[in-house]
Figure 1 (spheres, rainbow, N blue to C red):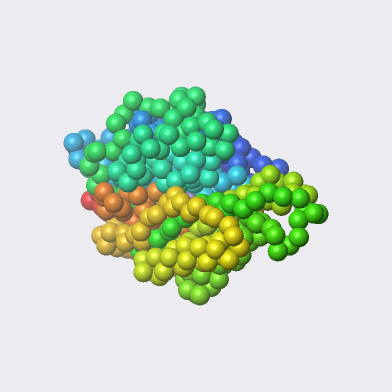
Figure 2: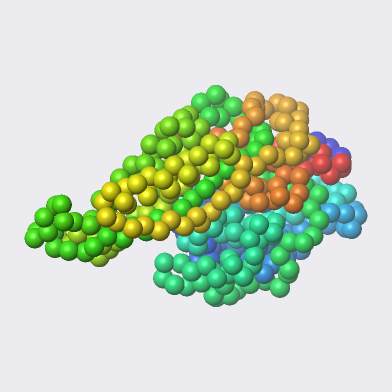
Length: 410
Ligand code: HGY
Ligand code: MN
Ligand code: MN
């Protein structure tokens, strides 16, 4: 077999075409999970994979599998994938890069007439982002047995539409059972979404694992009353209580610097009227740290602070954990395959841990898994200005191709 290289221009063109689906005026993408734009992107991915001769299957949680036969179809497949759903003000590359890099691998194998031993699969996972429907990495999580299909299908969005209803509405409640089949290895190409590769002028991140995450929803209850007539000492202001709890999210992360991070991305006051003291306040808290004990410390600290602040202000609160995934360690052989491919192809590289969650973190529960990072401009992601270069994206895809071929032994 010759020493194949992917077609970087074709990969870039596919990314730009896919980015038109859900394109926002500021140059980003809004393709919320199970929305019409998500459907449109899935349909396009399937069309391209069928044009590349892949056999398509869709499982009951909507994961799409594009399979290219190997010489021995009985072997467990070598697979790659990521997600097509985005944040509300997402970018062109988060997720779509890994899905279309998988397609580019298939196209390149076809161009070079490569017959792999095992089948190869390119996957688009359902609802990785977890913004419209809580629980990120949902599709890969059901595939890996982390979540049950029924639980995930029952999740409702802010309008009360359930995951299951929306999956059926867009026609992607597939027939295939979810998971329960052997996978030889899983690789995922993704932009780093952080600043380190660009800062160190490295082309490839050899991802050795991912940090853990614990995220919560907190609802604070006080008493609605008149903004003008209620003396300050008599107030049960739920939003003011939440403000002090929110300050604790930042303080807990800073206390675990430089690794600890804490974010409050959602906040809501009720009745949300400018001259009524809020009787209820809701906020989300996203805590992350590579060290499990430190992460648990942060979570315990938040619970203590919420109790103390509520008590002092005559408020009550409820705190629900909505996501908890542990730190992930990727498979040594797969990580070495990524590092070896980067070296053989002559790309600068460094080991790195992922500070974002990825479908690879689900897959690591049931198969040898690893990831390939490429830089993104100023380390920015989950933003419409998210950007990456065609050369870096092509480099990451070449590493993906050669890592998969190495594990396949072809
Ligand atoms: O939140 C995450 O880390 C991922 O981007 N869904
Ligand atoms: Mn992603
Ligand atoms: Mn993301």
